[in-house]
Every structure is written in structure tokens, then in C-alpha cells.
Length: 314
Image (tube, rainbow, N blue to C red):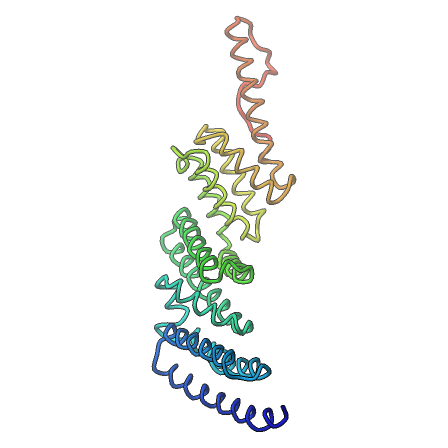
């Protein structure tokens, strides 16, 4: 073993390192990121075969360490940031398979996956910031929330397909959404306006399951909000207007949304909202009783409640 390790192995490993250092650098300067990833995969397979067929057992791990370092670690950042073919280009052009190939290569050196996750996170922040700036220009809260939901669907798919659904990438994307949504203090209001639009007309003609899915998506955005009390305040006002004006597409949807908010934040959070439904029920019962009395010919007492009011607004 001594002669093998001292003479042959040392020279062999140094020669391999030098070969891959040069080849990878040259290949990187002349090819796109996806091409480089394919080439690196081929090289790694070639080396694994060489270990299996020719080399001493103890040499294998040392050799693969060198090859992975030269092919992956050294160039990970350059590959991720490459103009016209790196991560931004892949995301802009829905090249999910290319991103997946890069992820699978980088997984061999786990520290390099951080560079990949960070790049996706930064891209989501940039796209989100753009969405916020567009909203400032067009002032259409419903369109803004729809835009956020489309982005959310898109990057959920990226995490699912390119990153094999891994939790760390999901967490990074979530952080990016929280970052840009909370950078605009009006986001809570925008979401309340969006749900108001759903309740007044957007859910018209929806089956129960579809309506539920759309409300769940709104709750996803709600989770990102740091200022949940601000949302509750706006929501309370719009809910009161819908209930008093009889403007809701469905009472079931209204109650379902409040139940979802309660599941997120607890009883305290939704107590005033739930109180409104109670007030409405009492008002309706009172009105019915009043009308029944009038029909029956007796005059109601002066203390009888004859209008609808919401005590839960305060």
C-alpha cells in the first residue's frame, strides 16, 4: 500500500486535479450553463466507472472529492450567475428541467445548493418588487393580488419540479414573498379588497370545491402578512358592508373564510367577524318577528328593534 499511495496515487490525483481544473475552466468560458452541467455529469460518470473498473478502493473517495471540487465547487457561483444561460434565464424562460439538472449536480456538494436557492430567492424578490411598482402605477388591488397568486403558483412549481419539493428551497421562496409583500404597507388592504371582490362577484357560479380553493389561495397570501391586525380591520369594514347590503354571493363562503382565518390566528382574531353573523341573525329574527306582529294586526312596542345594525363593528 505504501508505494501505491506514495508514488502512484499522489501523482495520479494531482494529475487528475490539474486536468479538470484546466478543462472545466476552458469549457466554462465557451459554453452555456446547461451545457456545462451536462458535460460535468458525463465526466463524473466516467470517473465513477474508472473507479469501479481500475482503481484501488481507497483511491475512489479521494478522486471523487477532487473531481467534484474542480467541476462543481469552483464554478458553482459562475454557473448560477451566468449571463443568458444561468438561473435568471432559466426562471425567465421556464427552463425547469435545466434548473433541475443544475440542482441534481450541485447536490453532490451540498454547500453549493445554497447559492442556487439564494439566486431563486433574489429573483422572486425582484419580480415581486416589480409587481409592487406596477401596482403603484395602475392602482388595481385585485390585479395585484392575482399577480402575486400567479407568481406563487409558478414558484411552487419550480420548487416542486426543479428542487424535488425540498423544504429548504420552499422556505427561501416563502421568505422572498414575505419580503416584497411586507415592503408595501398597503398589501393588507389590497388583500381585503381582493376577497371583497371574490365575495361580491368573483365566486359567482363556482362550485363548492373551486370556491374553497380560491379562498385557500387568499389565505396563503394572508399568511405572508406581518400586519394581520391591519387586514382584520379592513376586512371587518368590507364584511359589514357586504352583510348589511346583502351583497355576498354566498353566506357559506363568508363563513368559510372567517373559519379559515380563525384556523390561522385563533378565536380572538375572528371574534368580531363572527359576532357580525350573529348580529345579522338576531336582526333578521327581530325583523321577522316585527313583520309577523304587523301582519297579525298588533302594533309593536316602541322598544322593538326594527333595523339591522352590527354591534360587532366597534
